[in-house]
Length: 499
Image 1: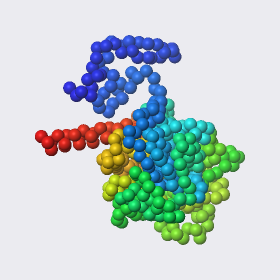
Image 2: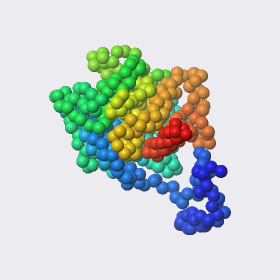
Image 3: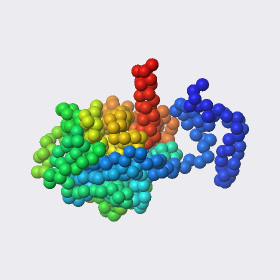
Image 4: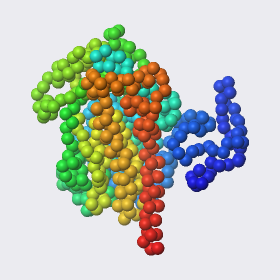
């Protein structure tokens, strides 16, 4: 019998709290032989005393690193600051270098799915977002020309309990400020107007544009999709991001303007995401800034050269791109006073994130930039941060960095490459032209709208298997398991070599 399930076999009475007339009572079940399963199943879920969101007990209360490293982080975006916070929580000496003269986040809304939300809570970041997030009740997929409901994802209390965190949306600037506030709280040094000009991976140094030489034990490049470091760890054409021929208009509308028009005010009645989908285009909307602003992301096919966009009338181009769509939607689009047009770039899955001397590693968009159609780009960077902190916490000396970084890379590539793929799959699913594939997609999502049970759906936010893969993943626990597996494998190989 597998050792993993031996603790579950017991004749000792097990006390379980249940509700009777709304009041908790203690009942003892002396016949329970199993309280957990060694396989993926929720069949014993009902025996859990309560469906509470797990408290953040891992990163905040964990043992400090035995080998304290001096870590140089390049880039003070979400990925760079997340990495700095996770490493500082383990006791490492961290300095962040940012080329911009001041910290400004471009964009508007951003989503915080549960797989990153539970990590942000453990890292002490969520407390800095109080009264700034919005917790949507559902995602509603709609037909492009009439707004007919074709798919639903419910963010129920059960969803929150299963995945240990709610699904949040927030203004990107508020999220970035929360990261920076937490970093400052932990004593992390952030140097602005400090552009890295060159890397010396062999010596773990960076040279700034002003000639300053910065020395560390490890350099973490979180320098985004235009990463300079990526070409050093993964040289070649495949490491160059490519324009996808899709672009997005990002805009924010004052909710008071929407409330003033009765025909469209319904969209503000309950917090939620609405997605209109059509041929080669879709629009995603939701409220941010504690419900005070209405975020809009309008995705569309555009094969023109992005370098020419500055010469265009962006507002008129945006409105023309969605002519003939749902009148409720076009009315809201008509309220947009300014917008930014953004090219969507894609980076193929890299097979290596680590420099030859194992003193440089890329993370976040520098390692796995993806189109935003799964809303997981920032979440993957947060997972990177926590995973790296786990691995560096296990080493005894800097000489073990190579092994630690290899373990980190193996787990993170296994996670991020499929997420890049899932994002591209959503691009396909959202953008079917009216016809056979579109009709089959809508029919396959009908059970969501009708409130019927389903085993699969093209809606990846609702598909049961995809949900557990995307939101049930715990980057901290997964990296700990990967580390233990790697150490076990190393011990077996060493034993074989001397046997």
